[in-house]
Length: 466
Image (cartoon, helix red, strand yellow):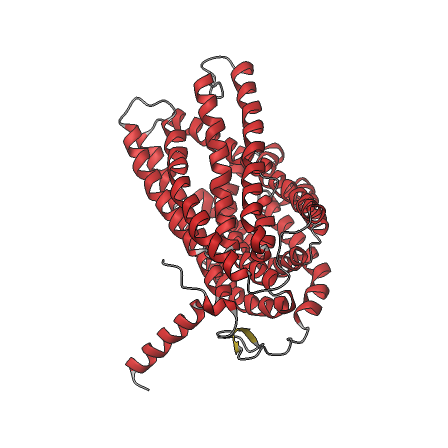
């Protein structure tokens, strides 16, 4: 075959794969992870160069405070949107409005309480003291941030995740430009302002996109399928309760881990933890992105969820796991940019965290399976067990292993959970594929049976303009 023929064949293969909603959503969400991580890194590098250390420190604290309040007050509604919106039918708009309203309302109450405390408890001049005017801006920003993040889940649930990449890409660029602009002005809290102002500006166009184009199209397409509709309130509450509790355990572990390292090892160890934890969280988000696409498609066709899971597993094995191996082998080179002390003290830690990505695959698939069957109570137990192993293992191992105790504890937790969950996941994925639908064709690169055919609604949807 000629070189031209090989290239043409590869282009056709890529176009065919991107025509499948499962893969298109997964790749878009993975790209979004890369875009967010890249812009986040560049943003703080710019901030360090154009603002004083004190301004950067206060800005970083306020931004992280806003994001933490948003996470805790969102009630994990985003995961419920991913699970139930694909099959909500005519109730889709109502479900989205409910998610926006409850999350934004809870964010207002939570942030108002925190700002009141910061204003009254800290004296002027303290880094955490806020004026009433800034406190009001913080409350508005937190509510806007909650809706902004919720829109990512809405776009994912509507199988239009490429808009997530565009939204966050534009946000990253505008945020950087505004950061430089405010550095030449007398705007107080310029770091926080440059981080939050673009969010409020972007809410309008993307809210109109969702409400006037994507939601009506989704409702029209759902009319061709039977059994669509929003879940009963009791089902939704139970789903969100388990998922939210698991999210709280996970957030508590991630936030407290650096503090624990300082307490039992020292401040320097916490610094050595930072680059390894940052890279690991980015890699974890790649697996989360793929599993989110699995939940969307599995919600639409529950009888084929295990077929989609097999296809997703193959993509994890050819994208995420090889990347983990490359990062693990190249850890000394990656850490060289931080300095020789980081190479000496963080290399094994980063390699252990990358090794934990392998058992994490089983855990990720089990979590997707649990969400598809609305059994989120197990997610809370899983996150709690992992938090106990990690936070309990670090003090036990730290005297002998130092900061590497974090890596060994994390790997042990993932291995234990994977061993417990593997039988259930294997049984689920080994189920035979259901009979082929009339006119169905196999998913690109998938030998497990049809995913969508010309007679199914997924092929009738117009391609999203990217």
